[in-house]
Amino acid sequence: WQAVIVLAVLTLPLGISTSKEYAELEWPIDILITVVWVAYAVVFFGTIMKRKTKHIYVSNWFFGAYILTIAILHIFNNLEMPASIWKSYSAYAGVQDAMVQWWYGHNAVGFFLTTSFLGMMYYFIPKQAERPIYSYRLSIVHFWALNFTYMWAGPHHLQHTSLPDWTQSLGMVFSLILLAPSWGGMINGIMTLSGAWHKLRSDPILKFLVVA
Image 1 (cartoon, helix red, strand yellow):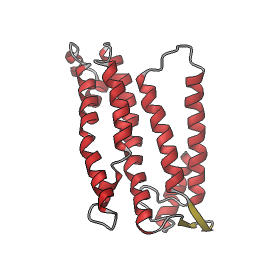
Image 2: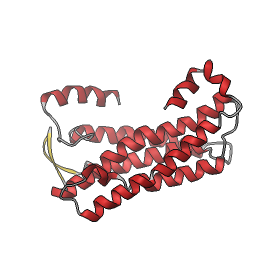
Image 3: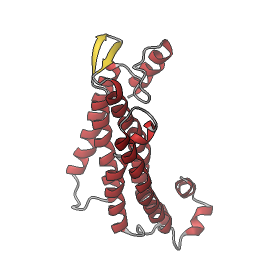
Image 4: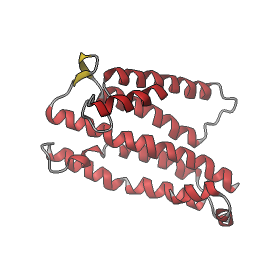
């Protein structure tokens, strides 16, 4: 992964880029990212398979979804034909290229930053507050609702473009529906602090998680 970062720092200022937002890196670096992500998935899911407890806590659900979704997005958005070692052309063209790009762009940010954070929230808030999660049932509903609705919201990045109107409308509808799982998860995290609000004064982990 550190090699990916170094290569990104070297290639992007030189203009070596696919010109795709959040997916600028050229194909050799994309392959390296894939290798890293497969290794990450093997470590994570291998650990889950070797667990000694039958139950899988909801934090791991969010981390598992994050790993699998990022893998799918990365592979399909970076399908390209290499022209040289540092140049390639997307397998998609026109409006299809834009749609796949923002299906990736929206969800890469969403799952990389949001879903992974929620996994941490569901672990650290109960741990630091020394209280059980407010509603475990709500956390499961939150997980499935977020994963289903988030994936459809990418077209809201392409409003008033040549993307078909029905696709733009679908993206906006699911963006609005996202309010429900977003607020549901937030309420679940904050309500876990019921009876432990005094810990906010001294616990920096809780301070950052509640603000986030």
